[in-house]
Length: 294
Image 1 (cartoon, rainbow, N blue to C red):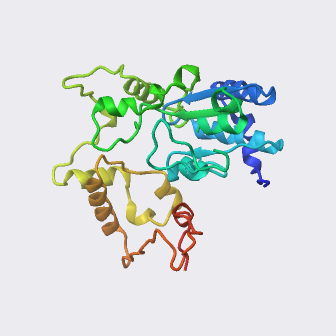
Image 2: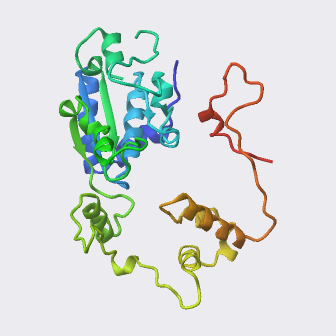
Image 3: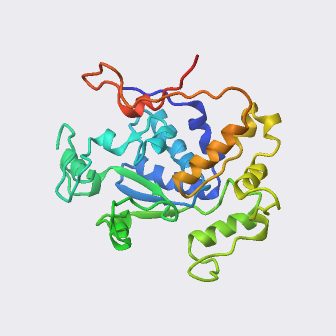
């Protein structure tokens, strides 16, 4: 099965920064020399790990080789060309243990070893993992801190065999080096704490509370100034966002913001399955990519 390679992914090589280019060349050298390689691209948010992945996928696929892109979540998979969740791609059972094999045609390390008839990790294939341990750890329901850490890749028997590639240049905040360095210090646990492991945010990052407005209104006014005049602007809406730590806070902020948009409110109900799809042809991941249009 052939896959059309977007031109921008093939051309991405020329736009890599020095760290990305070094990682790109190191990984491709293993691919071109048909030498086994296990890599982990470690980089905080903003270092453009996905851009590096897209460049690698574009190069390998443009030369007629096979490159499979997968991610642990559906959202992450959608931003990779031809990406699918790992469970979907390799038919991994949701409840897996140390003896689990995937449901692939020839009975994700043990399965590759079996396919390649080799004891080399992943059967000698070049594997590129990536992520940021500063952000989201594995989700283990009702687990302790130790159990969560134990489920992480760093506790895998493969971790000592993996070559680590570090990305540190924040491409999103490259125009603001003080903010970029602050993010790195926080992520690496190097920022000075005040008490109870709390850190003090720089003054320029704080939103000053106005006397007569509640905190939510103050925050919205700061992030979405002149909303009434700009709500139809795609650039205005997509260039700003408010993140919250709990779903209830998100729902509250959404309600306030929606109430500020002029016009009649409309609600569109989503479905996680297709009617009369007895053979399960339409996977939930596919349905979630569809966009309603009038």
